[in-house]
Image 1 (tube, rainbow, N blue to C red):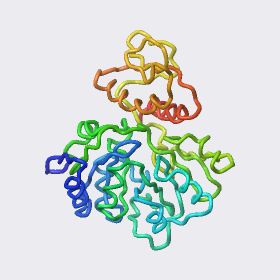
Image 2 (image 1 turned 90 degrees about the horizontal axis):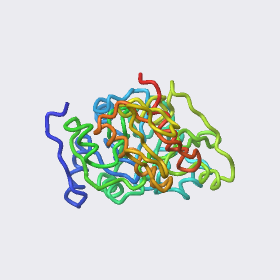
Image 3 (image 1 turned 90 degrees about the vertical axis):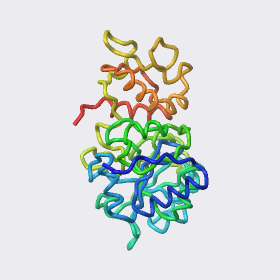
Length: 316
């Protein structure tokens, strides 16, 4: 536990300068991205990265995403092939993480890669995140700013409630507009989908003019967000429920009578943006049993359903 109280910083020049200074000193800073709030540390500093794992209670075999301000910086640490450059050109900055071969001699902590010879990297599309990365002028390892396996944070208040004084500071940049973590694609061999996320797989496939392979093994993650049980609220989750049974709270989608509704109009973009906020609210309501309405499994719906399946999976 960090002996110092959590500092709440404004997303102005002074706040970002202080946040960058904390990162240089090996501290932990949470900051907003377009997807969720990240928990940042200097990706070159072993002890700082170890502090991420400690604060989150995260398994050390689960690799981290490195955030950089632009694709030129990414190429200092990774080897890009033609497909990777095409995807970076189309979707960076944005909610796409690429898993790429680690460049020989790249100054990145082995704790970031979980000992693998690949690195997960992205350029966030959020003004506060980009300004912080530029002020820090280095790679920032930043998983979601929550306890491992729990609901990802989309507001600074979620970060404070979940991690509190276990970290050094949080930059309050308001709500995260996308609300789902980034899509992760491996470009080590043929492009493969490792995690559904804020950019639909169909959109990526159109860019590549080819289908994505699917590589997942929850026992040996090659990228974040692949563990079988993840994003879990306190209550037990039942999926594809047309109605709530006795004792359950219904998380609705579409025109249904529900205690909480991801999108009464059935808009998948709205549902994605509201998903984690609704799960946090269900915790606040102390919902012990949660029923979730059926959600279409296409576009952003695939990413929403991925998170809900992991939320409903048996807990370790």
